[in-house]
Amino acid sequence: MMTAPIPKAILDCGYMLLEPARVEAQLEVRHADLHELRGSWEHLCKDLYLRDGGSYRSRRHSCFVYTPATHMLELAPHRAHWQPVDYNALHGGMERWFEPIDAAVRQAPVWDHLLTALGAVLDAICPVQRWYIEAHQFRIDTAAGIGRPTPEGAHRDGVDYVAIFLVERRHIRGGETRVFQAQGPQGVRFTMLEPWTLLLLDDARVIHETTPIQPADQPGVRDTLVLTFRQHGFQAPSSG
Image 1 (tube, rainbow, N blue to C red):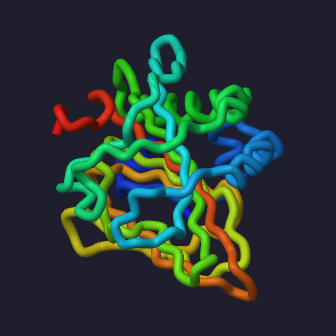
Image 2 (tube, rainbow, N blue to C red):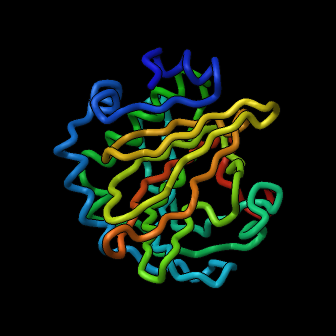
Image 3 (cartoon, one colour):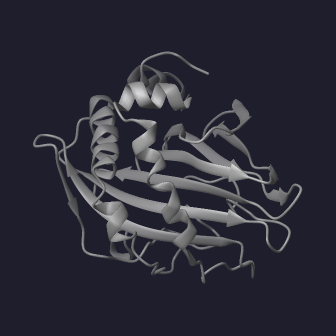
């Protein structure tokens, strides 16, 4: 794994993978506090919008606005998740309404700290007036055999930066993450194994995907927290 400062690594190659100890040090967050959030992944709601007919994904979704100058994080009014077809050929172009992230999670002190610390790191790379943050709790399960973390395939998200935390994986095989240059042949492949490993992506420069998962000795799950940061407002049909 890379050991360069986050801003330099992102500017150099468009991504950075941080092991849990580095996440703890870089974001000044305790793993014990992060672990307190893990139980909420047991209470996600089924994703009813999967166009491949699957039932392997559960999720919750909420939006926030972070102002670096004042270090203020605000919960935005609940809204649909929307992406252009150019970025998500499978699910783009439609408003997808998911249940919001539970209030107990949003009100946990570590939650605000995690989002503001990441916002501050990204502001050092790309100074902005505000970051418009979409937070997604995902669970991919193998109860029916195969679970697909990225059913849309290799993609970009249409934002400025993407932060993907592995929260937990158990009783599964597969789930290899792949990151490739958006305009070039180079790429890397790895499997995120340890809880609170972080993959940070410059969405303009790289595309990413995670391969399907299968049950190992019994049906299992892969839980992630995905935070996207966009400086020009939330994506919506009118914004293209």
